[in-house]
Image (cartoon, rainbow, N blue to C red; front, top):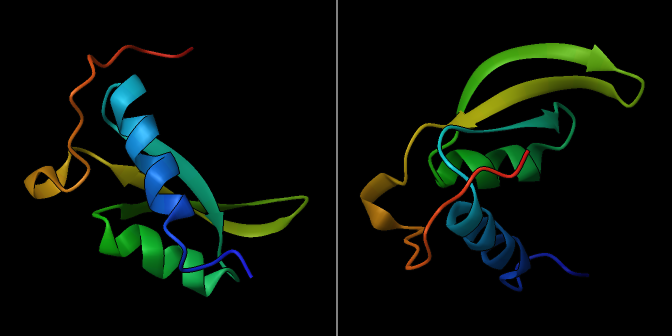
Amino acid sequence: EYQRQGIGTTLLKKIVENINFPIRLKCLQQNVSALDYYHRRGFMTKGNGSSEAGAFFLLELESNPEGSLQSTTKRTNLV
């Protein structure tokens, strides 16, 4: 019910505003719609693994493709 409302894009833009590249995340292999979402936004599959939740892909966004997630806020590392 919360898909396709721009919530994920808004969150991803905030992440881009606040951390440095590359951005890495894990996405469950069975979550095909999320994988498609991240790939459309420039994330590349860099590896895979398994966890208690199931098999996952390691995804990475190396830069902001064509400024699609452009930020006007200075980026800092959140560690």
